[in-house]
Amino acid sequence: MMATLLAGALWLNAATAMGAPVSTTHSIVGGVLGAGIAAGGLGIANWAKMGQIAASWVISQVLGGIIAAAFLYLIKRTITYKGQNMAESARKMVPILISIMAWAFGTYLVMKGLKKLWKTDIQTALAIGAVIVLVVYFVVRPWVAHASKFISNDKAGVNKLFVGPFP
Image 1: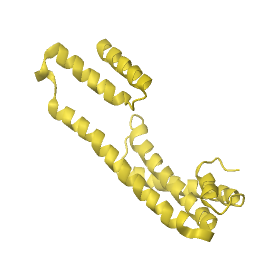
Image 2 (image 1 turned 90 degrees about the vertical axis):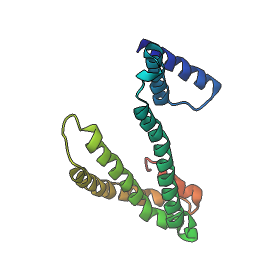
Image 3 (image 1 turned 60 degrees about the vertical axis):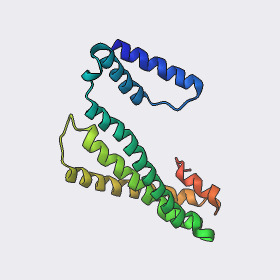
C-alpha cells in the first residue's frame, strides 16, 4: 500500500506539473494493480473486475456528456433562444433547473451518503428527493424573481442567474 500511495502521489504531481489532466482515482487503482502484479504476478489481478472498473470510467463520462448535452439543449430551447423574452423565460426555468439538481443531489445523498446510518430503498429516496424539490423550488423561485429584475435581457444577463447567490 505504501508503494501504491507513493506511485500515485508521484504520478499525480508529475502529471499536474506537466499540465496534463489526471484523476486521483485512476492513479490509485493503477497503483494498486501495479503493486499487486509486482508482488504476485499477472495472475493475481482480477481482470474481470478491472475491466468493470475501466468500463465504468468510460461509461460514466459518456453518460455525463449525454446528460449535460440534454440539459444544454433544454436551456437553449427554453431560455436562450427566446429572444426578447429571455429574462422572463429564465425567471420561470431557472428555479425548475435548480430544483432538478437538488432532486438529483438529495436522492443521491439519501441513497449513498446516509447508507451507514439509514438503509432505504429507491422509492423512499425518490420520495424524499421530491420533498427536497418542493422546498428548493419555493425557496429559490423568489430569489430568482428578484434577481431577474436586475439583469439585462441577453445571454450575459441570463447567465448571472445561473451563478448565484442571487442579489
